[in-house]
Image (cartoon, rainbow, N blue to C red; front, side, top):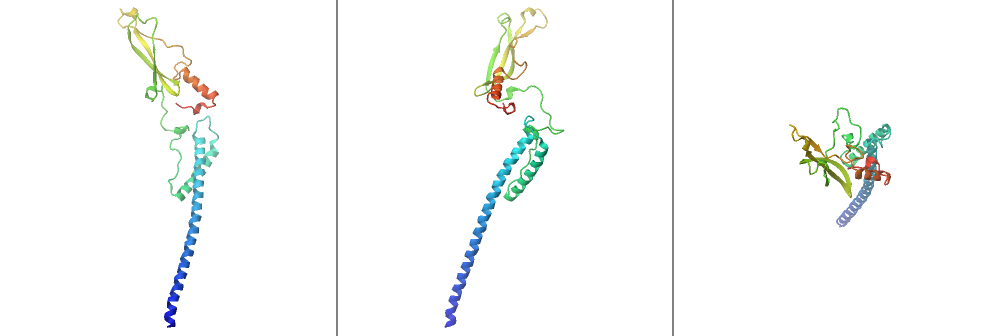
Length: 225
């Protein structure tokens, strides 16, 4: 009788001990999860800070020459920060960061053997800009000589709130005095006086650039069309 009574009590005590052990293990797991959560948040904060520092160094390394500093020390710090960021990326399971493949895209020096910088006058007709047209005629030839077309050129102007493509159309005339010659003479209406001959910028754009520079303190290399 005593053995039959002690058996349920022993099993009950064993179950209680097992429950106590499981509760202790669960509490330890919760403490470990809390510690891992704190470590994860710390790593994320360090990762964001490193990203900011890396972007700042990248700008200092690859910006225009007007802003460029002594890059020797910056390049060493850049490599160190990039390595540290790569280590954090591995811990967080994110793709590794890399330096710009083409420094010339952000204003840096062009590598030897790279693609040559395009030359020649910029074609403003390829730009997505609103357009204004100005037609110029020659008062001496208008009405006395037949007009045979227009010669068009483009300049960049400023009209609030954006840039404007200014199309300057100059009338072309067949010279009446050369009607008896084998090859008629073509006369084009002259351009008005310009501040900068053959420049793409109109007086309105030049005024806007100078106003941004000397009134608003915006550097030339920060002004972009």
